[in-house]
Length: 308
Image 1 (cartoon, rainbow, N blue to C red):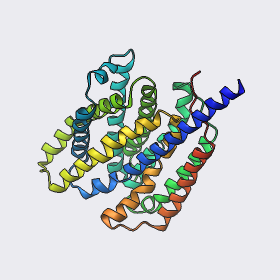
Image 2 (spheres, helix red, strand yellow):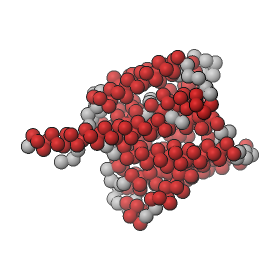
Image 3 (cartoon, rainbow, N blue to C red):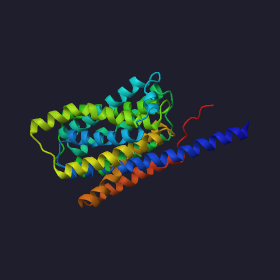
Image 4 (cartoon, rainbow, N blue to C red):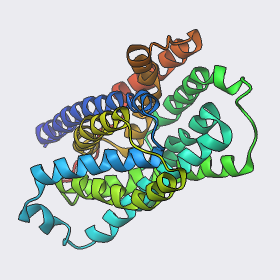
């Protein structure tokens, strides 16, 4: 009996380690999104359509099979897939509005409180208690994020906007629901079906806003926009989303949400390489705190529960 339990525990720990590595790698890739968006000049919604449209076409060519589409007809899958698409696109829109109303630093800080809402809501909605190591890790990660954003939060670009705060918090909450919905779907459908459905829904939901912003401003695509959109679609979406779903299958959603802080840590590195922007000392200090938070989760976090 004890040998069997040991084997299950070892299997769970091994799967968890792989899951951590894959999810962390995904957030490192996503760290390039900000630099790629800054390099282009198109409205964010248009870049999102280019990004998800490119990813959808590629994933369709790779994963569109009768077996894949059959998974969408499984009980309870279709409505959760729809919710996931609504939550993901809704969180992105809220994030962009918060950035516009509050500035980049304050908008990012509010949006990245999302893992706090995951830790608070997951025990009630996913019936999985929040691991105790999550709370000190969250505190360190938020402190690190605050340090990274100190120059922006203390600058003249910061101004109070009730609308911006509302959308910033709403984006964090909606992102938390997106994470939990995706986690629930990983138990019922394959990674191929999940990421294919998500990308198509994100693309479709973003088209109306992209048309409104693009036609209203009379904007025309540039070569930078096309290149950025293709790289975002192929690397940061088709590849990264598939990796994320594969990794999320093996770790707790609360742990995966804390690893999200790797994204603002790696973003300045991409900005240095692609845009020549040197990171400030506050950025380096904040990054160190976030890395410690990630190490705590990886080292002390409990494995995903393995069904008997």
